[in-house]
Image: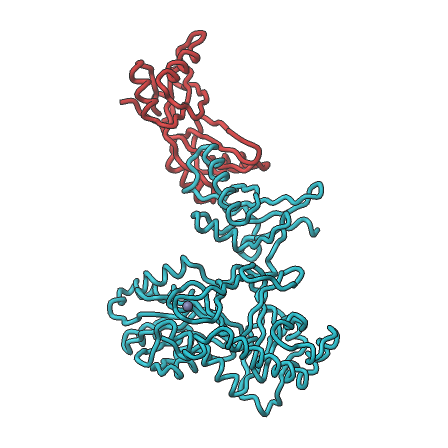
Length: 430
Length: 145
Ligand SMILES: [Zn+2]
């Protein structure tokens, strides 16, 4: 089932024409109305005349989170405030928050994107949709709320927290569709099974986003709730959830390419990379009016896939982001993300308390991974430890393509900062 | 049936003070040591202990975030004559007993030398010792209790 079949399954050449048309209009719109970005374009020696199609997109300067902070609060808005109907904001744990503005048109296109996600996850007007994302400045609640209306679900605007009430409504009102963060879904599942009320529930699917989650977490949610769990991706800077979403195939998230154009760039040189390469995900909003961003650097490391999908949608898919470009290390010339190492450790049953130590000796990088040993793994023999280290070295080489020196260390022996293990020590920078 | 004895293996990183920390923890709980040996490679080692209350010792160590487990080993009497140990080892080799490691200890009660032997397969060790009628000791003989 589709929400907007004519767009979701649009012929790719027609889609490209549509994207080109929108891009040219958007470049003009921003040049005329956003002095901050116009100056950036001028500094890069680009004028709207230089952008004739998506092929020229690479000429436009990137927008980074720093730009958004610098232009706080309204510096990136491209329409008068009288045209805007709402703002949302990032949580902003460091520095200034980002204020994203929306016209009614922007709200509509965002809700359409989320509605496509709900329908792709099997949602329809027959569903009772419980929204457990926070309502307020955060985009999660509002995005799904509007989308649930558009699909015609009976919408329960629960917001986040108050687990007792969530469960009571779920049971009494017959919730069939759940939208919340994956960690909260896991917590709800735990409570549901503890209280033994799973059989009284009618849940059948859910969309879980706004934070990173693994395949094993998906499996856990699906099994413990007896539902299908779908992933979704988005950023407040681009509108909110629904920039991309999973279909029934659950193998990558379809990007809503009629509104958001994706690129992958090298996280160090920022050169555009071909399809299938791993790099930083960059988005251009093609037709947002109030807060239109060109080449916004998400800092998410990702891979794009343009193979046709069995579901019939023609829009390309992105993989679940595999790390943040800020966390990337270049070791022996290879891009390494701590999240990749964590994935190997967890899949092999180790604790996620590890530490990467990188140094440079005689002009070449040394790469050591310290992993805290669990009592279950230690059978009391030296050779067993050696064996475990060798195995783990092999697993990590398979993942990264380079060899790390793996060292098993005593539990709690890795230095901690505020309770968390210090993940990376890069002595090359000292 | 010959009895195995419980040995504790503790994972140790090679940094100063590790051994004294571990022994201090056991002393504080009045756990008595009977034998001790350390096997090590460059970065870590395994401390092996025979104590009067292995169960309690592991509990104490685990509570202090140490990695400690109990292994089944045998205390084997060594014939008290030149070449005695050599004979024993040859005999085990002939029976295809795969020895992981061994170390010696003296009994408090009879003053005899014993080898603490850990085999990959403890049953093959027991069978070989039984077949050749070699003395083994349990805790009482070793004078722990
Ligand atoms: Zn699909």
